[in-house]
Length: 124
Image 1 (cartoon, one colour):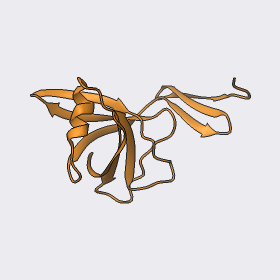
Image 2 (spheres, one colour; image 1 turned 90 degrees about the horizontal axis):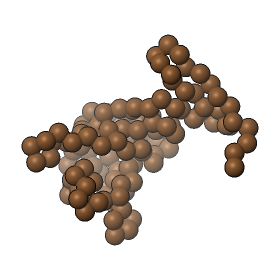
Image 3 (cartoon, helix red, strand yellow; image 1 turned 60 degrees about the vertical axis):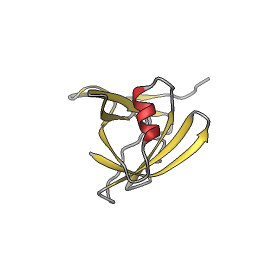
Image 4 (cartoon, one colour; image 1 turned 180 degrees about the vertical axis):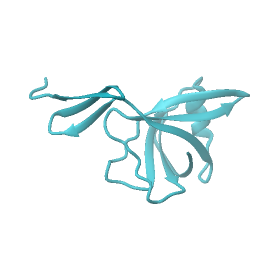
């Protein structure tokens, strides 16, 4: 899926918040805890794929926010930092095997046919 960068915010000297808009405004970015998206790009003639977890709420539609630390020698993070508003990035996903359902309940996908629910009463 190709997403368009609609906003880039400098959070600190090495951290950026990227907001990407989907060409399908009704698209729901499945951003539950445990899911990630893979950013895909051809950088210096090589395919580079990096996973990122969105910081967007499950209730938000049509766009997705990523908070990314930019490493000096990081191929994808430096590439992302070079993007301008209006540029596009390819994403794959969502990927992940653990989904938080709320109220201490998690769903874990061991295989396509074997999904279990776990409950956590107390943490800490």
